[in-house]
Length: 195
Image (tube, rainbow, N blue to C red):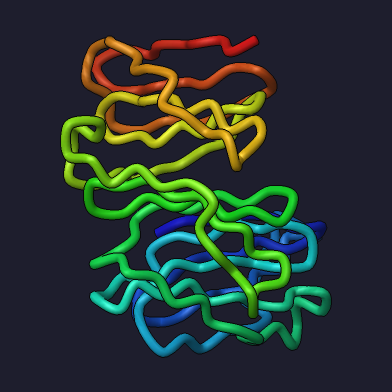
């Protein structure tokens, strides 16, 4: 499952149950206010403005584009087809979607979604040490796919992206971003800064 936020709403990737829209205006009484049906299961999602991008966890490798300008009536407005076997992580910013799948990391120009195209791809087994990455975060011009340990792609600008390097540390279970830091948790908490 994956979650992202917009204003007073949380959007939850709920696998075969589509995408749940949860009102969090009053966190003590958060409630599901809408469900967005999806043709396939959803593993990950990311919000960029009034658009939510959700990865289909299936062999068709689709990205569902959802108009969330009105969260109570949000629905799929477009589907971007890719050649992925399956996608596990997605981030979105400034009209670009950053996606991880089996042994690959791609950047797509998704503005507008109907004319989406790949501006960068890395599908080399030697570059990607794991079959897939569960998490993908953006921080200070870097995309950071994560599974056990993060690797960094310089994505500023997206069209000239390149593999920047990896971070060697103890295996971790999860990663998250706060301010200019990314945190890896596992046997111990490790904190990294990207300036």
